[in-house]
Image 1 (tube, rainbow, N blue to C red):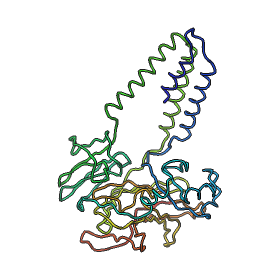
Image 2: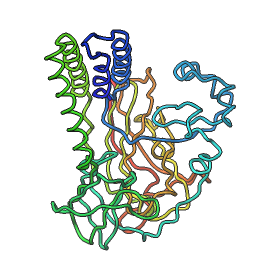
Image 3: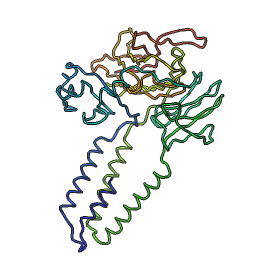
Image 4: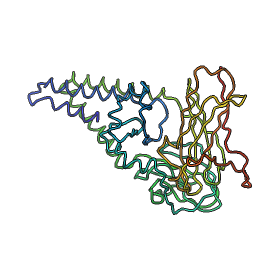
Amino acid sequence: MITALVIGGSLGVDVRNRPDWWYRIAVGAILGFLVITSLMNAPTEPARSPSAGIAKLTANDLNDPGLLRAYERDEANVFATFGCWVWFNRLIPSTSFLSECPRYLATMLEDTPVRSGLPAVAAQVIPTAAGPNVLEAAVNSPTPWHLSLHAFWIPGWSATVDGQPTSTGPVDAIGVAGIALPAGEHRVRLAFGPTLLRRVATWISLLALVGWLVLAWRRHWRLAAGVTVALLIIAGLVGGRALRAPAAPALETLDVNLGDKIGLQGFALDKSGDTLAVHLVWLARQPMDESYKVFIHVIDDQGKLLAQTDSRPQQYASNTNRWIPGQVIVDRFEVPLPSDAPPGRYQVRVGLYNEADGQRLPVLDATGKAVDNQVLLGYFETF
């Protein structure tokens, strides 16, 4: 985009080398707007899997002044779109095709299970790195199985098993990215990266920019100097913001069996101010007809509930009854903490419950006996 704008700006110079200033000003204004807005929206935290979802709203939901102020929506506008509010990482205009609520309510809110043809798995996944586009883990399974991620397969996915490259492809009818694994213990890496075509296109863009700068320095050094300074400033701002971005918290491994349906394989806790970020790594063990919600409770030493959050996985973007066996789902929740919470030591507990009847999935031991209905992740302290 920047390369195209810079080259396009050069067209404002006519054959007699006289600058068409209004054209350059217009291009500069567009470029400045794109750069400023991009930097304002640049993430300051590790990349997250994009989320999409739909929420049914009532008039009471619209009484939050902060919500209306942030997204400039009013009651008439919301209910004109069938009383739905659609988001894709952030709320989107009602003119987007994603806001066709009758169509998306059927897939997002109604619990229509995915009928997978894959058998149940008894695998163990110990992740060392997990994100929306990468998984590094030690895996173990008594039988051959398919490992997949919560991302669609497109060209660019690659994988290694025990250090050796292996082919990737779409798994099952939903087409998520994955690999076929033999039985036994293995080290696996599954990641998304640029293809040869994308690399070539990037180099062409860079060479075009360098070529334009060389010509510009020879013919219009003032313009070339301005563009060079602007590019250096942009690179510095973007690079500085990237360097200041917090590192992803290290995952702690688990192997929790929740009702023989879902495994909790890893977690990380990250408290920042009055917000507790909870990172979870799930493993689907078998097809499910039920939609389960995740609950996260923050409890003090006396057993009093300090804070909680309940949500479907992936901010309502991934119902459990659409998971397929062997699929790894990287999840993240933010739990708001009371600003007046007394100093002390608090425990964080997590579990799953059936939306239809509220029944929690039991935590099973190695013999299949239910030992609890929630998992103690860890502790944090406030001062």
